Length: 240
Image 1 (cartoon, one colour):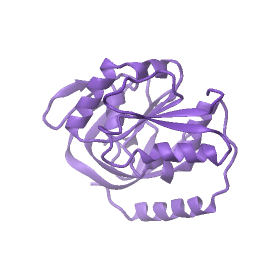
Image 2 (spheres, one colour):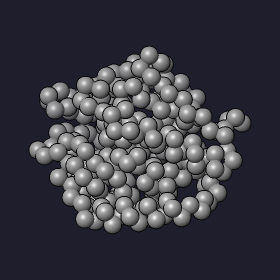
Image 3 (cartoon, one colour):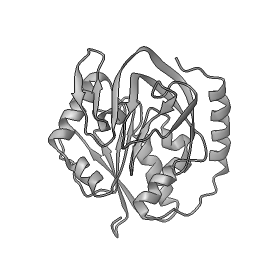
Image 4 (tube, helix red, strand yellow):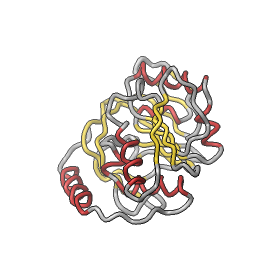
């Protein structure tokens, strides 16, 4: 973290911006500001190079063509990969998760090489997963369950060197009972929401990595109440 505060990069919001996952950047910025810590969100668009100097990088979801465009751009402009090697926090949702992986196959059966920040390989499933999802997690991601909304066809296998972030209680996730993947400070998930608005403990985990230690607690009872409501709703939802 620089003296000027935490720099949060929203990676390719003009390409991976279908599901409002850009809200994750706003959540991180606001939770820092509530604690009196300066924070800046920087949009890194398709015309931009990717700097390796930021503290947090966020990738969102998108369609197959957008996903392929994104991975080609990021392989050509490898600032994100250099930042991850230096210890930056990297977080990908849905298509962004698959881009961070080893490889992914789109619905036209074309296989694309990912960035390799996660050992995760994705192929299309037989049925689309749509609906509320609950994920039971363990430290360091836990102990509170994660909630979100999934909308994807991908089925993801996590390999050696990475680990799933949790097990699915309700929904589909990776398709084998697990959800997401993590390697060090690089995380991927299928949860939309935005997921960091729905899961503040996960947001604070990432902020703690960026800050070099756990951030001060925030007393936000309305967020606790909303989480309880979401958990109740998810228990009655169905992943397909």
